[in-house]
Amino acid sequence: MIGIRGGWDDQRIEKIVGNLLRAGVIIAASVVFAGGVFYLIRYGNIHPNFSLFRGEPSDMRSLAGIFHDAFILRPRGIIQFGLLLLIATPVARVAFSAVAFALEKDRLYVVITLIVLAVLLFSLLWARA
Amino acid sequence: MHHLNTTEFTLVIWLGALVAGFLGALTGLGGGIVVTPLLTLAFGVNIRYAMGASLVSVIATSSGAAAAYVKEGISNIRAGMFLEIATTTGAVVGAGIALKLPTGVIAIVFGVVLLYSAIQSTRIHPELTPDDREPDRISALLRMDSTYPAIDGLKSYRVHSVPAGFGVMFGAGILSGLLGIGSGALKVVAMDQVMRLPFKVSTTTSNFMIGVTAAASAGVYLRQGYVDPGLAMPVMLGVLLGALLGARILPKTRSKVLRVVFAIAVTVLAIEMIYHGISGRL
Image: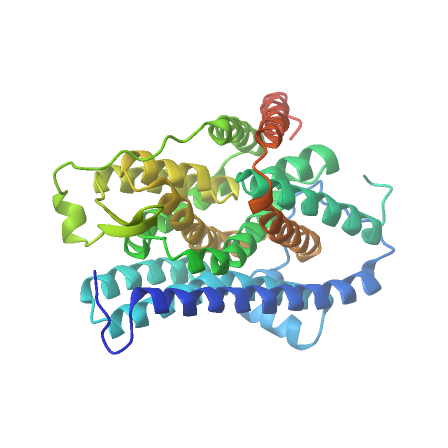
């Protein structure tokens, strides 16, 4: 195992990571909740229909579209932005792990972690099936 | 459920997700896996929207629970990170397959996985036998061998069969992307039974991997329009709250009865999913 080097040991890193994840979830859930309140005020009385799959409109599927709709305070945009923050939380965790392994001077695991990060960014930014 | 307006629909879904998250945490099965059958069978939601909403809630519970697990300090972060290469690439592949498959086939596969998870959740895990086998070359190279706190102090363990475990993890990733689940049960099998990590280490490491795996699937789902904010909102908030409540009560309940009852309920859901998938109603 990697020993304590400059105060960076696995245990301390895991503690920071745990707090990071918790903060991410709390922030994401708060944004989703706030968006949800606006959503119900706006659309509360209409009848929802989720039985037919049409796919979301393009502004709910791209990062640029979600940022735009959230910025102009559209209820669905705010919720989707919160969900995006939630998805970003594990991604941030992996990014942080890469930095932590670098501080531990563990090159092998820096590479392994960057591969995982690359797959995550690929799925979020480029993947089109 | 067409007679409900959006406010009523949202509240009912939230309550259902709350119960699912609560029971999922208590039984260790995870709330996400029952949310999709609940949404499709009880509320007539299209399975693709249900998968999108469920997957998002899986990320929430995994990340939310991680803070508690970290305190115990027993997850194997190196093994977890290495295996995430398999689960994330598997997830992207699985999500790609889901886009091509008809909903009936997805429902059938979902039912089969649900059935397997129900059986898996009731099994009793034997105490780990001391591992005195030869060190494994690959796990030594990857520095996966570690220690964990047992009743009689710190115990060291060796990790075995890394390629086989990697393969099972790739399969777990495919299922995650294909069905919008965390596939925690299969991840535990890969580490606990294939790679011979101690059971507690396997479950905590699995939890930390679930969020990362699900994030890989979620990227594809989001871009393909599977994530509807109006549906995912009550599902995510409900499952998260339910799971947090369940985790709080968990240390006080060691009820085997609850596990069995939940496993039976899940079995019924599984059969319904398969039946509706075959009859073309989902």
